[in-house]
Length: 192
Image (cartoon, rainbow, N blue to C red; front, side):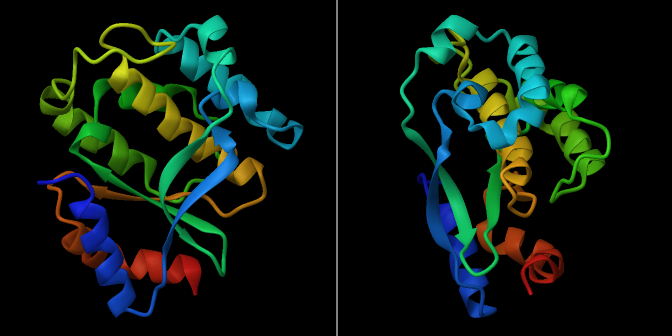
């Protein structure tokens, strides 16, 4: 499936339900990760640093990155709610490991147990996706670890910045329309 097809199908399905979504970038969600967060998010820098280190990140390299904003999937502008569509490559053993350092009781816009189970189920395949691709601050074969870290960055930093928790929508099959339909009630409840 071509890049972007899943997200485009999700956006069309949402629009049919009267949910207008836009692509987004937040300047404080940037390539420096927790090193680039404003003081307002200080409470999550500790857990994010633990996640970063557990994934083998290099603090010196990460702190030296630019503050270029990371592109995200969708924003519901009326409520400030961020929605991320997670295809197969998000359900790695590295993503599963990242959950070990989430603060207990932290507000999440997805079911943590469901995501852990999806990671266990799909990691044997997802761990092979771009497994040799290098990622700055994570080294050779670090792209999957970087993705897991940036997913955790969004999950923890967004509520710390005063926005609603990130709604994560699993789409391991790559079908954006079906992903919206499976999560329709949860999404509508969160934004209306």
